[in-house]
Length: 173
Image (cartoon, rainbow, N blue to C red):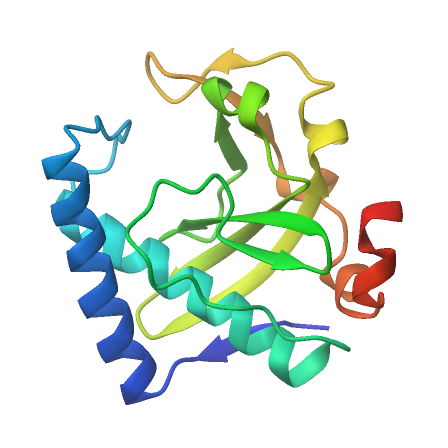
């Protein structure tokens, strides 16, 4: 099954406002973005937040739960939660990508990592993995000089499993 969603105008506006605000917060906090994209930092923040919104909207339509959308400018490790499980949504603008999670995230990891692909306003929930599975691999220098844990799409779990699991059982997956 294809888990694709097109955000409506209100969600696009929300992603633009919150993504811009998060970018400005990162500038104030002097956070370093580890990106290789040629897009601007603000565009990456907008797209990243739009991926979070898209994941939340998919859960509302398909799953036995809905995920909160974090509108705050805090440096939370997680983007949302499913029951007690913390979720980090990774969004990339190209379809043929692997899930990339910075090596620095291992010590402050979420329970679940989700891969979303697409461009505003349409995103696809490609797959997901647990922190235990992801961090059992060795990080590699990819792309370029950044050390990341990398999981190819063919190794990710099917979205249907996550979306059909009651929230209180997600940490058992």
